[in-house]
Length: 165
Image (cartoon, rainbow, N blue to C red; front, top):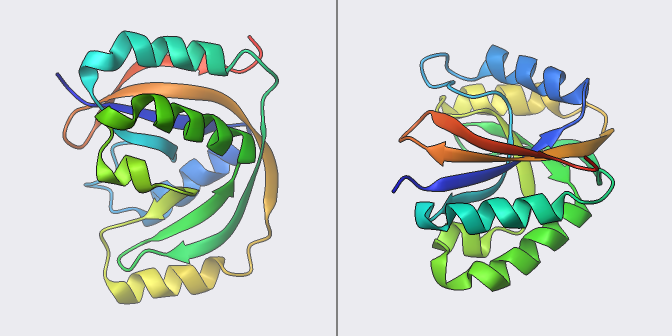
């Protein structure tokens, strides 16, 4: 079965601004997705019903606060740090429940970010990092958690769970 990805969806207009940044700086031949905050990278597809139920339960509350902060150099790309303590708290609890099923990447993840550039030269990444460095921190909310099937590059939607619905 195809792996599952969980991402956090940010409120407008921040989500649209990040989509525009990604469209402008991500290599077009590799840009199959809007800007996104990956919460889990590769959950086993056979856990689909359990993951969906967990997401439905997680969003039964008001949309949590988030801030999109300074850029982080990824070597061959740039990401913007996302601080969303309530989402990370939920994620930590989910890690305990799904520990036996997690990849090393998902077990070790401790922070959130939005990748706005990837798979470019280190020089291009350093230039964008410098250009984004003065960008002010932006306050927003996480309005939904999205579930995706990973298809080896593109993702296909498997559900969206809206906070407070």
